[in-house]
Image 1 (cartoon, chains in turn brown, green):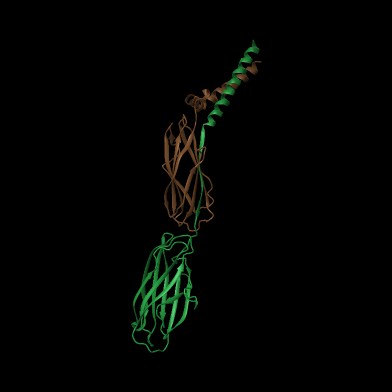
Image 2 (cartoon, one colour):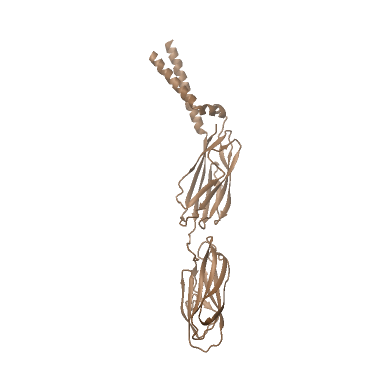
Length: 164
Length: 194
C-alpha cells in the first residue's frame, strides 16, 4: 500500500510541476477568464481594397462572410514588373490580445509571380479593439518573362494566437 | 483510513488531470488564421523590340501590303514583303520620259491583334541610302498614336524621288514606335528605288 501511495504522490508532484513549469497556462486562464467563459478570441478582416494597379486593370478583392478569408483576383498582369497592391485591415474584435505568431506562404505554383507584404511583422501584438492595415503586393517579377497565362495561386496564412 | 487517503489522492489527481486537459483545450481554441487567397494571371509576353502586329493587304487587287498616291510608268514593283515587323518595298526604274522629281505618299497598315493597347505612337523617317542624291524630303506619320486591341492603323511614308534612269539606289526608312508592355517597340516601312 505504501508503494501505491508513493506512486500516487510521485504522479501528483509530476503533474503539478509540469503545470507550474508551463506557466503560460496559468497566465492564460487568469487573463482570459476561460473558466468562466467570458473571453472571446476574434481576429477578423474588416476591410480590403484594391490599391495601385500598375500594368494591370480589373483586380478585385472580397472578404468571406466569416471575415476570415480575403479572396483576390489579378486578371491580367501585362508585363514583367506589373503589379497590384491590396490594402487589408485586420481588427481584434474579441476580448483577448492577439499576437501574429507566423506568416505562412503556401506554394504559389509559378515562381514568376511574387507576393510581398508590408507594414505587418511576425510577433506584432494586436490589442483588443485595435486594428492593423497592411499591404499585400502581387507582382509579375521584373526579372521574369515567362509567367504562365493560366495563373498562379496566391495563398498566405496569417496565424494569430492569444497574447499573454 | 488508508483507503480513504488513497481515495482522496485519486480524486485530487483526477481533478487535476481534468483541469489540465480543459485548460490546454481552452488555450488551443484561442488562435485564429486569416487567409489571403487568390489567383494572378499574366498576358502573353512579347520579347524584343518588334511590335507584334498583323500586317494587312491594303491593295487587295494586286495583293500588296501598301498603296501609293502617284504611280509613274517608269517604276515597277519588284518586291513587297512583311518580315517580323518590317515591310520592305522595292521599286525598279524603267526607261521613260520623265522630268523632275515626284513627291509620293506610301501607305501601309497593320492591325493590333493582341489584348493590349499600343500607345504613344511616334513616327520618324530617315534616308538610309541616297545614290546621286535623288531622294529628298522624307517624312513619316501615322493615322493614330494609340491603337486599341482589334484596331487598325495606317502608316505613312512620304518622300520625293527622281525616277530618271542611272539614278543609283535610294532607300527611305520610316520608323513607327509604340509603347507596348511598358517598353518601346517598333514597326518599320522601307521604300527602295533601284
